[in-house]
Image (tube, rainbow, N blue to C red; front, side):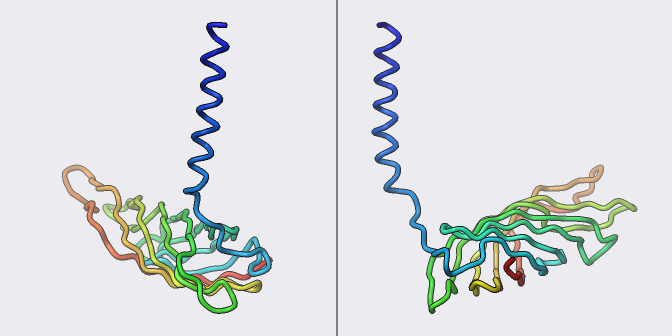
Amino acid sequence: MRILLPFAMLISIANIAHAEVSDYLPAAKLKAEQFSQWNAGAGITQKLAHGNVEWVNPYGIAYAKIGAFINGEHGIGGQLGFRYPVVLNGKDANGFYLGAFAGHLRSKTYQGQDETQLGGGVDLSYVMLNKERISTFSVGLAAGEEMKVGNRVIYETKPELQFAYSLSVGF
């Protein structure tokens, strides 16, 4: 009895807490007939030329980018992110999306070694989305880790703008 009563109280409190939290979940703004669930394409993010895969669901767009930097020794980089539709306009799911991302931000060759900066940030995107394609223009604010080689600072931790464009087709 000593164990059963606290356990029952815990279950009832958890159910009450879940009922209160469910009101705060974001609304699903995209309808399944408006998009292709899986999309693949290519784009450029700052100096990262990449291929990308995008998963569209009723709550937004999750994406993964992998590619090579177009400067220096062409080090490999990638990013993961998610965009949530904030304002939609038109008959398709076109509109402004607010997102967050993490991954490689910059690359530089220093003393024969590729140094890539990891970081994350937020972005505001204009997405043109329909069943055949996703076209995304985004401007983000990113900050990365400070990188040092010996006593020399290669990359500082400071906010920077990140511009990106990608075009994907549904399959």
